[in-house]
Length: 155
Image 1: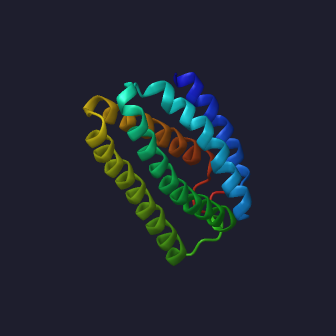
Image 2: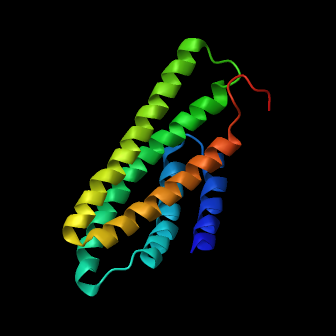
């Protein structure tokens, strides 16, 4: 399972790193990753027949909101990529504050949908949802942190 997710993540990361601010490219990237991700989630989250319709309806809602946050993440990474060598203290603070706010929103979104999933399925399915989403998000965060240089670092 982790091998499949890592392959999807690598494909996502390569495309993610090359993403431009062009909205169509961002939409295409997220649509492509969303399909692979949904397959991984379907493999990991064990649903009964009676849970499937309600879960996937909620999951699609979640993904729509997560993708919007992903677009903001890409914009912030593009901003950082063009400024990291010359950031002023004020710019660095503003950028970091936006990144932390985005992380809080992303974590909050997962928490909100954990509760919604639990209400229409059960605690096991909700925990599986949380685990897979948190795993993927953590892997993406690690990949991004591994690739971006520190402020004022020459790369």
